[in-house]
Length: 519
Image: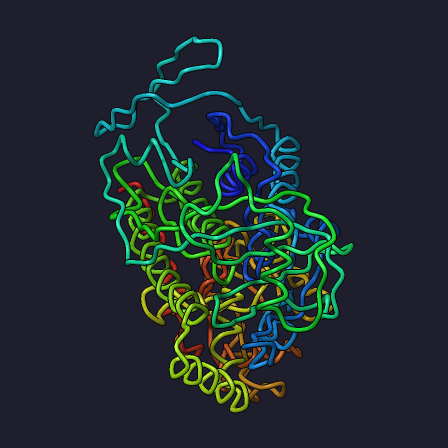
């Protein structure tokens, strides 16, 4: 349910596995008033899974980082360009409509369609699978049992309501005016700008060709659909809050919305799932909403597709709720803090905030903590047990390529590819084994150790030998000692294993396979 970015990602993931899907949408269609306009580095990595990252890069505008100001004075900058652990060290700005356009073209290339104007009116979530009633625009009704249902139908999700799932959150309640406007400005075009003033906060986000996204807090009910915020208001607030000098030349569109942070009490009920805004609505500060929803989609899709292919057992799907709900709460907390930081207005609190931002920037703490948080490269599951690894993910399965062990356990003729920057590419559908010597100069017995590990691995296991130079961010993540790192299909670490004990790697993979078996 739902044909926004989240629903489209899930559909593309399943279709590329040969799994038939129906994408139905109640009629939201395309709108000029698309709020999400940034894709962060972690999502650019994951979007490689469905083969759309390059087209998005050709469409969007790259940003090197995010700068923060108070009363026109620059306090700190979170640099995406200085991230050592991503193959995409930048943010990408483009309208949500453009993002959806790229995803819809990919959906069509995979043989999928969006059924527009089809509304879910009833849902019976029985033990053996959901039964739904759909209503078409012409009044025709349809009853079916889809087997599995993903509700990506927005903050007012019918799926969530029909399932009776709670939807509560922390006390963040802020209204924003928003526009895409042609702007003449002295501010840098390769940074987004968070501008704080006693009267409130404002964001200026370059989108290329002189167009900027402007978002600012306003009183509740100040504007409505019939009374959108005018250019004069934006110009007045830009004059009051923004750093530099800017002139709002023309509004391409404008609107307002109210944000109440909400997170569903569970993201799974039987064979029904919630993703994106249906599962969580967070503060727009930091542009995390759509990106968090997309990560829901990727986390769910590789697990669900494996279940539907018969390779995984249903228990693997339990981790979707625990992993993504924990991340949603963390993102909600961090964006709420960012929102509150921009809205302090007493002299003492302003001085404290400005001093904290400045000190954090000068000591490097701002770059070490906030940049990975904004870029979503810091996402980890089950505490720190399953951190995201700085890798690329293949847009196709490596099952039939030279990246796997042969039937006898011998290495295939060639290693998996590394891109021009040295970033390894892991398998999209299965756990990949990374053989890491710990340093650029391998230990004397590394080749023998590596060969023992390969011989012990189950047939068809994707293996990547990293006995070569790799980006420093990946080297840092793998650590200074020889290790076997088993990486999940979504690029998160499953576990590290001592290469001197190759049987432990085999047991780990066997245990993972048993978890996912039909038994």
